[in-house]
Amino acid sequence: MATNQEKVQYALYCRKSTEDNNRQVLSLDSQEKEMRKLALSLGTKIVKVFRESKSAKKPDNRPQFTELVKMIKAGKVQGILCWKIDRLSRNPIDSATIQWLLQQNELKSIQTMEKEYLPSDNALLLNVESGMANQYILDLSKNVKRGLRAKLEQGYWPNRAPIGYLNKNGKTVIDKSKAEYVRKIFELYSTGKYTVKQITDILYKEGFRSNNGTKYNKSKVHKMLSMSFYCGIMEKDGEKYSGKYEPIISKKLFDEV
Image 1 (cartoon, helix red, strand yellow):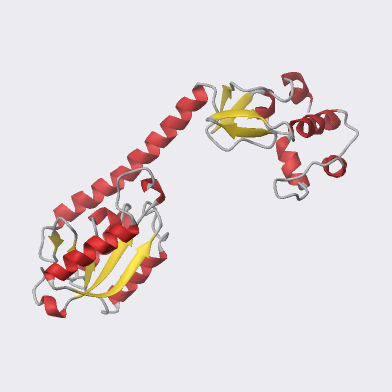
Image 2 (cartoon, rainbow, N blue to C red; image 1 turned 90 degrees about the vertical axis):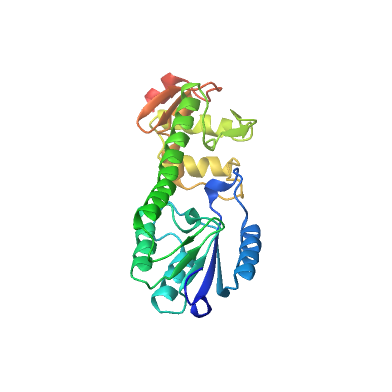
């Protein structure tokens, strides 16, 4: 532990991010329980517990982390207890903040389950470990994008289905309660006799409602008219893919609109 540990007051920082939902990372309760046990065995004093359910891949995204840094700079906390160093940060900005506080001796100790980081340590090791945490986020983002692209290439929509469709068992299927309304939107607009607002009003009177029973605004309907998804063509990041689902309208009708 840090020298003069009786004078070092620690904050316990626990973080659970959205990326960790399906991974074997300890929950906030488990992190706090395990780190309290460690603190007890080391004789450290915890003056504040921070619990955060936020991703650390972007700076200025974690109010609890920001408050922790403020307490360190104010001299109210001199040490941090956390499960692993990547609980503190997965981006280079926040990592640099922690490293600078440590090098300036404002932060006297970072204690994880694996080891303790001190101001006198070689900064390279903490840089490497922080860099690995940041690289994990970069790789995760690439893998997610690659997975989405692969699904699109196979003909499947990887996101929430638009109005007129439903997500069911990993597939996109027709929403029978709304598909006919969607078709009528295109048919009415293709005549050139109706404005988007008029079409919105007509279909509302006929029973076209959002899931919470409210009227769709004209901007929503206008956006629907530009979606090639309804004729079987999926668009994502400027690329077009042929969808393996039932189109609500024909390609001819979409082109006319």
